[in-house]
Amino acid sequence: RKAVTGLKDVAPFPIGGAVSIRKLAGDTALRAIVTTEFSSLTSTNDMKMYSIAAREGQLDFARADSTVAFAEANGMRMFGHALVWHYGLPEYITSKDRAGMEAFLTEYIDTVVTHFRGRVDGWDVVNEVFDTRGGELRATPFYTAMGEDYIELAFRTAHAADPQAKLFINDFGTERDTSKLNALVDLVVRMRQTGVPIHGIGFQWHQQMRDDTAVIRQTLRRAAATGLLLHISELDLIFNTHNDAAGGGVEEISRMTPELLAAQADRYETLARIYRQEVPAPQRYGITFWDFTDRDTWIRGFFDMNDWPTLYDDDLQPKPAYDGFRRGLEER
Ligand code: G3I
Image 1 (cartoon, protein in one colour):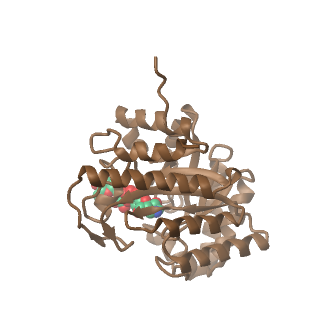
Image 2 (cartoon, rainbow, N blue to C red):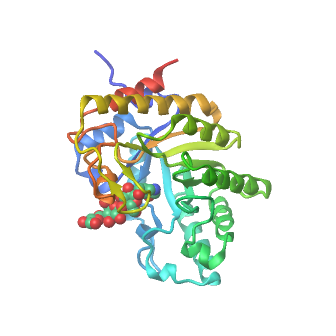
Image 3 (cartoon, protein in one colour):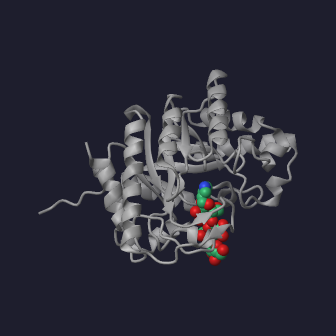
């Protein structure tokens, strides 16, 4: 009898998936993939500020709690995404002045991290604090109210609430934009020097087939030199292109061929290998897939274009990409 082994069983570091607990609850096939393949879980949307703090004066933990319970029941590590992100926030938050924002962030982060203390292993404390391109801090409502101080406040508050939790700064595009990577590394180094409790860097890695793997390798090497944990936090790999902002999709490829699927498999293999080769074992927080079926990928809706960015096809069958990624993990 052949034992079923998943990616988690062959990887020398945690392998994660982003999930929606509502979707998981009603879908046996999806659940089977999650429990067989992954050792780490991230909630796609249910632990975001806009989900938990949608209504003023009242935090809603229902779906986040169910997600954490699912992770625990299946012996998986739970990762928290994300404490502070500007996207989709209600007006009562975005309109705050400095004092109001400081009070809100302190109370929100303290309450949420305390609520999950000991059960959430690590957090994206701040997500996407940099502009889409270049190295400037993004003019979010937090930044507008408090300047760059909100970042330090967020890390200190999270650390005080759960001193064991690993605290990350998470962003996208840093593997293809040197200015953005420089700004990220500079910020992290400055924070370490001034004693701000930050433990890791998250690379979203929403990648495109045309990205230069030599540059990707180089950026990971540079980040590894900080000595911090490195999390590939939102991996997927698209064929078409987009401009990194909502709605900017360009659909050049409209159907899959065996050749394209094979190229994607090679690329997934290379990415797994780059992570293994460039990140020293103690710094490997793991690789998390952001949606892992083409059926459910956020790409199609968000950019309004067709694509096939994940390891599983529309019928939830493993693609060549799955085998490719697995090869990249397993080789010695
Ligand atoms: O649940 C409602 C559904 O009831 C409604 O019919 C439908 C109509 O628009 O919307 C559904 O909610 C959507 C939700 O995804 C679930 O699919 C929201 O509109 C949509 O805004 C939301 O998008 C999420 C997006 O972040 C914004 O929060 C994506 O699922 C999620 O994959 C994406 O994740 C982000 C990371 O957090 C940060 N990095 C980039 C990444 C991709 O954009």
